[in-house]
Image 1 (cartoon, rainbow, N blue to C red):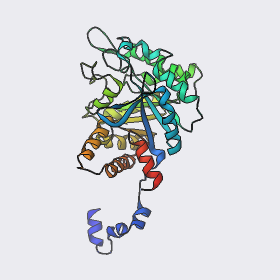
Image 2 (image 1 turned 135 degrees about the vertical axis):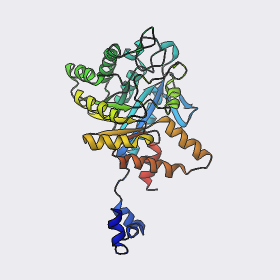
Image 3 (image 1 turned 30 degrees about the vertical axis):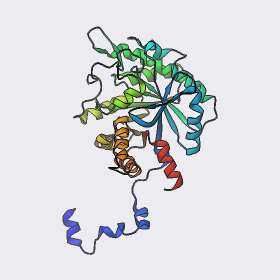
Image 4 (image 1 turned 60 degrees about the vertical axis):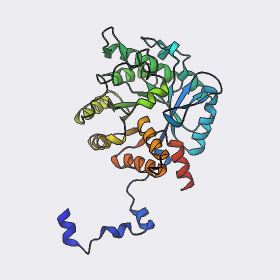
Length: 336
């Protein structure tokens, strides 16, 4: 390619296609739209609460009675999907995570509230045990500290079915247990939830970028060991393809890569290999780093956010979970 270009210079000048805004617009290969945005929402117990998360400026936990403002914002901005994440009080956390299958838990009550409204967006619910376990892990743990795969899957299937019964449009297993997609899919099918979508966190890496999220859901203080026995090795990429292939065969409708910006190569490989609906998660650590740098005026926040989200699209992501969703949607709507 380099020889071809050099041999045709000056007849071939790529800068011609960058010379003015109108030609740059015509030649743009990837465009970010509101349809690419998924908005993560943290929920908490109580009334009339909107609590800012200290490590995530401008991100809040909302009590269920305040979710109307979330619904109105999502509808007004044309956001197609919100994702619910609960902050479970310590007194409701146990080793066996019973609160995860309590029909009156935060997520179920939030679903009841949201589904009573005439909204134009879907609701995604995370399937994992870390908000509900006293030890902060995504699965059940034995006395030796081992995360139990098959026993966890049985509980995850019950949790997924419970949320489907309360109206969840998308079930999103984020736990990284082997085989859980097939078990959850079979449970949903057996109970006539044929149209419930499974979005699998298929390639979730054991990243250090999740700390603000763990504060947001209240699991950081409980977690005494890492999650490397079930989340993926950050050095591996072929393994991600194996994970994705397994989840597709077991019945996932969408797969997701988490975190985002450091794993664009994984998104690209998955999309190229499988040509399958693929989402990305711009995680809490990515959000907080942008906020911190922007606060110091080291970077322009809006420009960096658009650059990163566009890079997800360029890598092949069909949609992106991002805490910047309403901010970006506002910008796109105003054309600024």
